[in-house]
Image (cartoon, rainbow, N blue to C red; front, side, top):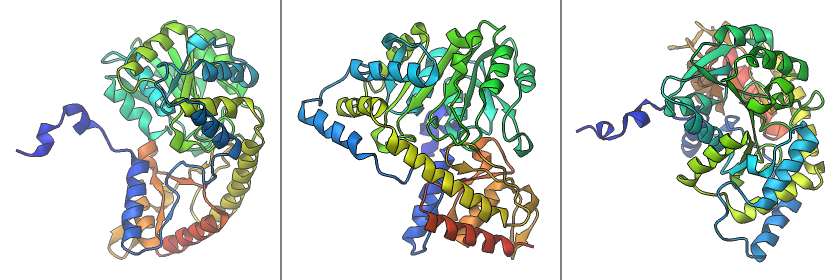
Length: 400
């Protein structure tokens, strides 16, 4: 018997994470002796700021090595509550906050807690790769609402309104956005909220993990809009703004009944996040944010450099992302071109060609619901980014 037949239907239907897959392909090629530049993972190349690491060491020394309450240590939830008030005009009590093993688990907890088979989830596209599969795993139906580069990859209220049906349960999006770097303004979020507000049984999940990497001013949270304040779940975490990817620490603020459900769900999967990591997280939120803003400034400098370098490549459409650390070029002009026997039909073909011909790992836009684009992460050194842009340009010049 084929071993695939022994696996569950849900795992056979699930697609592998494209970012992780591309990262593995890059490692495999590197293992063959090739010099590969990987721009595929959304991971800051900075180390966790020293004062946060020191807080974890201190917590270890003080005995924070035991199981934690499923929704998180009180110390961290109090810090998160204060952070929400300070930065987002959101008033979540500590019993409305659930700390998870990364923001991805928060999305999974919500989907598994709220969705029944057939429930529809409006997802703004381009979207983060895991949204689609997590929704399907929970029995939900992703309803994709797409915006192209001509809209700065931001959907309109009119598009959201047109997508709502009597089966709509959730609306899910990120701002700043992975993979596009687009940032919704307070005015844009209010307009979207006003479309959703009349539908009392529709809830909003706002993924704000890139909040501190915002190049256009103060971050706006849709949960601060009065008309949807009681129907919004705000997700955030420590991976991006604090360079804490390996710490696996995320959190949500939600109506209490949703927070209780997510805590119940998490209690049967992983229980609470690490004790010493949570204590360090509390320090991260309430101490000097100077290192975070220095990282943001570095990302901004890299963004501008990469926009200049990519702008020199003919037929590649590039907009100006306002946050995160990604650029999401439209490369549809290259479809139909070839190098030898290799023809570029899709973004998947494009990404594979750039990897094998240019030895630069990028991610196809198909993974993000945008088949004519690709994602570059500029969370890498300027030297690597310059060389990667050169390799991409040289590889593309071979296409006819």
